[in-house]
Amino acid sequence: MPYPSTFELPTTEVLTGLANEPYARYLLREQLLPAAVRDGAPLSLLLLDMDAFLPLNQRFGRRCGDHFLIHVARALQTTMPESAVLARFGGDEFVAGLPHTRLDDAFTLAEEARRRVEALRLEPWPQARITCTIGLASFPTHGKRLPELLREADQALYVAKLQGRNKVALPLAEGRMITKTSYYTATQLERLAQLARRVQRNEASLLREALDDVLKHYNDMLGGPPAEDASSALDSHSPPTEGA
Image (cartoon, rainbow, N blue to C red; front, side, top):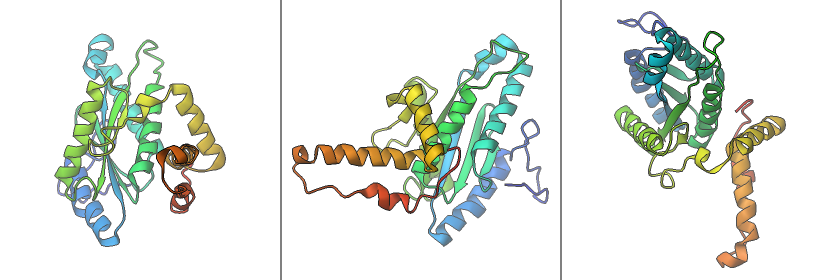
């Protein structure tokens, strides 16, 4: 999303070129949230925090840290849709507001961003590595106002940090803090991403399809009626996301 210079204060953050925190809060509060209410559309919020950024700066220098910040910003720009509001919230924290994006699709986008950050290599500092932890929240499930959404995403991020970092996390209300990267290997996640690109579907819909198959297989044990194939119905509302 382009950022006009007609705002009363500067709208962009100098180092990364993303929106700065005051302007991002304004866009989220005054534009994205009202539009979601008006259209009855989903809106997801992503909060990204770089892991062990201070030790990175201490070991390799601030110039190295600045270059990682720039490349993390580029990873978000490459991964997120053009309609997203992307901002640096100061320090090593970034925010993305994702209009018309359901939580499961936001999870897929966040996981791709996490992988891109983990894969970053900077030629002047071949030994330097960085990862990130990402917390998510969605309107209106986790809040109807910006402070509520930021608080839920921040809480998810905080718990994920305690669980080992380098994860994408949902709010606590979503399945007791499920983090997809806690349960699947890097090889499984990479193959899932390849399959999603090959069949032009998002990863979340493929995981739902697999879950449907598991539930059908154990349906007799569960003592319930035959399970409906929910994935096909859900997929009809989920446009393919290339590269997700």
